[in-house]
Length: 104
Image (cartoon, rainbow, N blue to C red; front, side):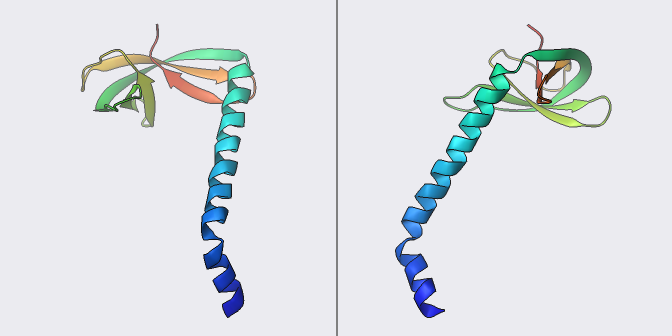
């Protein structure tokens, strides 16, 4: 038992790097697959903007409460007021992937 623990400690950095690389490859492959799948439907929903998160090198992320009781995150570079009512779109792709966006 002790020798396997010692071996794991010696190789911890390599195991961690391989795990990070595998996770990154999985996320990249999933994003490419979702982008290639055509849009099947677009539904309009009403929501209220509850909070906002500004990131330095990423789009602004808004937390919205749907009228049906759910919560969604929407990334958008355009400014929106906190507490304002907003119409958003639920986009469903052919592969079943669903995401939300503000209408253009």
